[in-house]
Length: 490
Image (cartoon, rainbow, N blue to C red; front, side, top):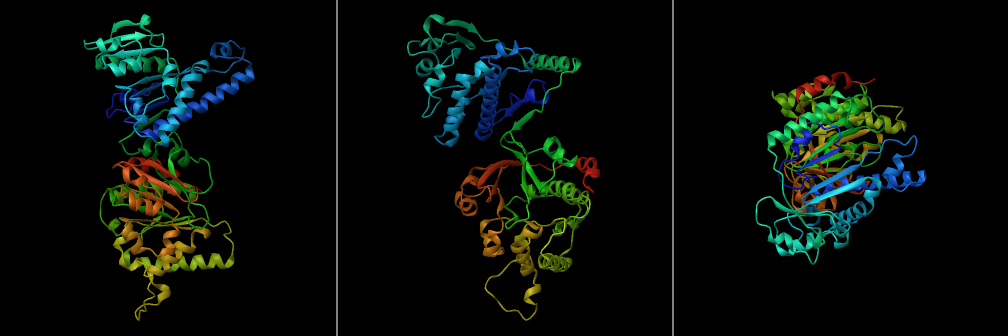
């Protein structure tokens, strides 16, 4: 895990080393915490395994006949102090987990290497936790850090002056264990050569690593490398259809919206990010098509599809997407209203496939803006107005398999374009960067205030949690072509 704003660890990710499991480049605190949680889970599992086998450590377990493979695990965190820059829930949880890993991990083959430029500051890892780490390495530093790194009676690191000069100490910082040394310098080309040799050696010996999790904090998600999406496209686990949105900020399945047949099962995007919407929508259409089969309906109303461009091309590559024009939209809404009434009157879904209506940038379509002032119009039948039909579909459709996915550029337009009841029927929301006040109005949390360009927050009201993720970048046309056979599933 690298908390620096650099890409020093990227060389390990690019070569897909067989022994690497997680490589975090430009990481953030949420992802780092998820790594600690996963290691804590591994620690507990190994503890139960050792108790059942009647052993106390890794050598004892490995000596048992028929023992399963149990590799040692090494956790490296550069600038680990980033966990503690704020006195919040993340820092509190990280402190507890790191303490448990440091105290108990070595008996179970789990070891930690923590690096930082300074240990000073308002918040830091507990002194008792640092005391469990017997091996200390200090480069030149000030007196305060010298005492923190070594021991209260060992200020030797403050006397170091030469570049690369350090002190190695394997007795918890006691003065008599100081061992001066000079740090080894390795050129980038030499390092890469060694990495290539390790990779080639593993490939030639038939050793294949497990799934590698690579996290690049400031890079958008890459659907072409998403193993969870690949699993869905290859006929993975069924259930409620899911629209995949991006890569999570944790070691878990990709961020996806599950559409169950119950009230509130609509999805609302809020924020001025048309570029992200144009990337996500074709991927969402593709993943939904693979799950709902030929009989399910995907309807995308977006006048921009009449233009020639990458966005329209990607949409056309998904089989069976209906793209009504502005003139055709009212007819489509009337048809959906009639179908919804038929199914609800019958009171049975009889195995019917779901229908999804996508309307990006809803604020652009004045005829779809729902007015709650009960205005009277001589021109149109109130019941067949597009805005009324859409509002009814939002409020009554999800329970019968009709789901609306729409986007608006601001909280102000959310309130202008959707009726009060309709807003409440969007229990699933994706927010891009906005003010803390607007974020709190939409999801009862200011989580969207600190988002960057490659981040969004997904909120599921039914589950009551807000999840930060990295939206997918545009998928290349080749990805749609390769998966074309999977997009129509019987």
